[in-house]
Length: 105
Image 1 (cartoon, rainbow, N blue to C red):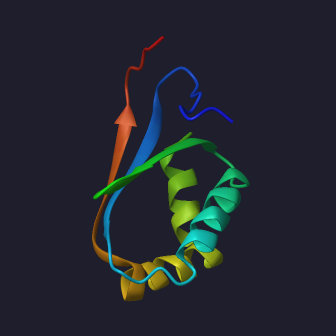
Image 2 (cartoon, rainbow, N blue to C red):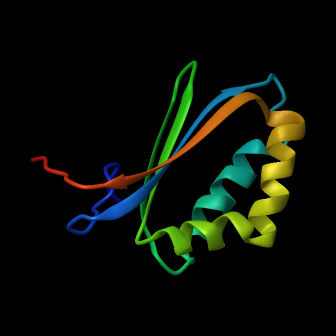
C-alpha cells in the first residue's frame, strides 16, 4: 500500500482529522488500525493518509458527502469516536472539503 493515496480524478471529498493526544494509549493502536480496515470496506472510500508527530493528521478521501455521512454513522466508528473523546484526544478538529484539483509526480 502506498503512503500517498491514489485518488481518482476530482471532484471528490476529503475529511481532515487533526488531533492532539492525551497520555492514554490503552487500546488506541488497535482501534486506529481497525478503523482504517473498516473505512476501506465502506462504499465510497477512496484512500487514507496519516502522519503523527506532536500533532496527528489523518486525511481520508471519499467519493461523495453521502459516503462520509455513512462512515460517521457506522456503529463501530461511533464507539471509537466516543473512546477518542473520552480518553485518547486532548483536542481535535475535523474538516470536510471538496477537492477540485489535484496533481503530483
